[in-house]
Length: 224
Image (cartoon, rainbow, N blue to C red; front, side, top):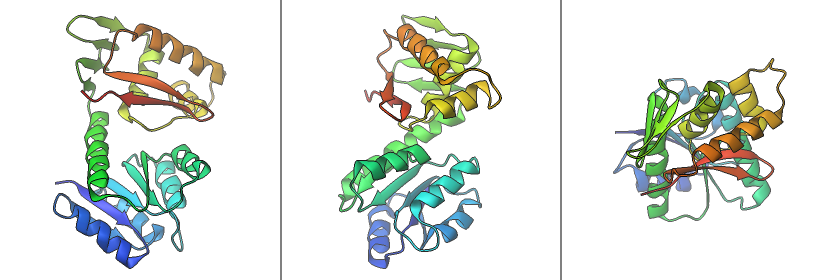
């Protein structure tokens, strides 16, 4: 059973969120980001649900800190903030999803299930999405009717995006991750590679690589 960390300073909201999830998951709680950060260091957390406005360390700071530590645990921001700027900031820092209060119990469960399911993709050398298999040993994507090979950089870029579906990566983040921080290549290199990947995958319907204007790129999994 997956373990979910709920980070919420408001007691009633914390208890309500626990009540909605405890029948399906193991649930642990923290009252602020500092306490939550300590719990993430145990290595036993499968998903983090965090409010933004909290004392000592808010949800943004918690998210930024764990991503800088290399922690890729799925992260869901749960907040009363509704502005696009707030959501943009959260996705830029590396959140996987965003829900605005008040929310329904069913929607919360659907989103949690989806995040946990997609997080398991990143652990394998092969990613199976619908009818498509993405094979990191052969730098290929194949279905029953199609086999596509990629140069290493193109494949690494695709695999990076598919390993964290719905997470938005900026061009700078992808450039540093795939080409290295000391690379002389520019952000246009990322754009060119994305274009080549899309062209090769035009007959693959299980997933898409989407441009998020002003932010970067993300992989969108097509539910079948």
